[in-house]
Amino acid sequence: MPSPSIVLISEEHPTEMLAGFARYQAEYDVRVARSCHEALLTTHDIVAEGGTVALFASESVLPDAEVLHCFHKLREKVPTARRVIACHWDRFLTDAPGLRAGMAKGKYDAFLLMPRGTRDEEFHNAITDLLSDWGSTVPDPEVVAVKIISPSRDGLTMAIRDFLDRMGMPSRVWEPDTDAGRYVLEKWGREPAYPLVCRANGEVIHATSVRDVAINVYGAPTEIDLEHVVDVAVVGGGPAGLAAAVYAASEGLSTVILEAEAIGGQAGTSSMIRNYLGFPRGISGMRLAQRARNQALRFGAQFFTGQVVDELRPGFDGDPHVLCTESGEVRARSVVISSGVAYRKLRVEPVEQLVGSGVYYGAAMTAAREMDGQDLYVVGGGNSAGQAAVHLARFARSVTILVRRPDLAETMSQYLIGEIEYNSRISVRTCTAVVDGGGDGRLEWLGLEDVRTGEREQVPAYGLFLLLGAEPRCDWLPPEVSRDERGFVLTGRDVPKERWTDGLPPENLATTVPGIFAAGDIRAGSMKRVASASGEGASVVPLVHAWLAPAPEGAPV
Image (tube, rainbow, N blue to C red; front, side, top):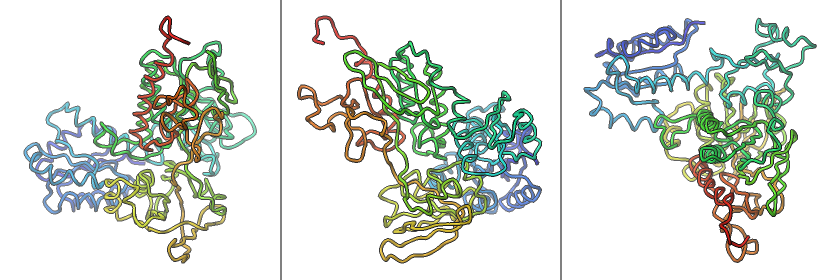
């Protein structure tokens, strides 16, 4: 397969543009076009030769087309490519105001100054970020950390790859009769059983669940010195749990994080978060989670993924709290509950039976790559649904968002609504619900109902992605931890007055059990946004410090 291409579009400064991208020529096929028309012809040739384009970089002014119109035509040919305006410094101040608004609608990914020297690292930092983001979404990555051998792309195989993607471990699936398949089978040395998962160190396991892979890669809680009581145990590795881990570990608290699935929680499945503070070009949920995880590791936090907490036994009178998992117990002086929420079930039985075979809860980043040229549906009206639709549109022929409400404005951020309106591959059907579905072994059609009239219609569908809102993951909590009628954990003044102590409510993020706190989506009244969850995770650490601090001499105990 030919190297991926970078197409530069410049009539006035092609020499400067090519010089700016010189360092990429060793690994990318860098081509120069002098107009939009020439860029379209060049792209056609690349695709015809079996290649693809990773990045288009254009000057702000072209001789034969408005630059955003050119990007629109190029996206129709290669929807997965990233798009950059590299503006010459003579035009930067005059062209920026008219073009920057296009980024909010997803018309392109970055507005940069053309490189001003051979080592303009600010420019190259943006370019490598975009190329890295592109590389994480291609079906077959160049660098592979984990090989998966399976004769079919069944639900388990896809779930394992999705887990590895979210953990930042590039993977690829091979069939048993390929060179890679025969290599892994030989190392396995037993009766074939699928899927087989082979790590970079050569160890091969037969995975019966995602949890098998997580334990194989990251270990089990039994590896913790159980003689040691940690200062804080964080249950859940989403934005709230990660923030709590970073701040707790950086301030010298011994910190353990237990995550049932992949680090990042629901946010980890977001293809691109564009409104998170400090990332002007946006950041994928997976990358945000991995950076936070590495930050916490740097300060000494310990992570254990694939670990479901089955029970929390509260400690009283100075005893530690005990978190029980299948693999062992973790004892902690304080606990932060940040286990997040699960997507609500559709509860349409014929559709539920196809989960993993064309039907997916969440954005299913890995499954998106298998949807090339297909017709897909996304159910949900929140930001997660909007982000999923935009990502899926890079691969699918069409993406239809289904919502029961009359519009998206009440539940989705305006920047996403604008991006969806601009994208010709995405359409929105309001006042519509999924009531049926089926297919021969995988999803082939859906039954849709107009919630106003009751009129039903059957439509062909290759994929259905369900992002239906939040249900708490609280079954493992003891009755001593007070929850609301929906099951979310109550904290602070939301706690019923009869559970207050000496007429005072718990602290803002404290539960009804001293030393147990809650942060993020699991907490009743939380905003259900990445930034607010991160803020709560950071804010809980001073409360943990106050709880762990010894009482002053002479103070009542």
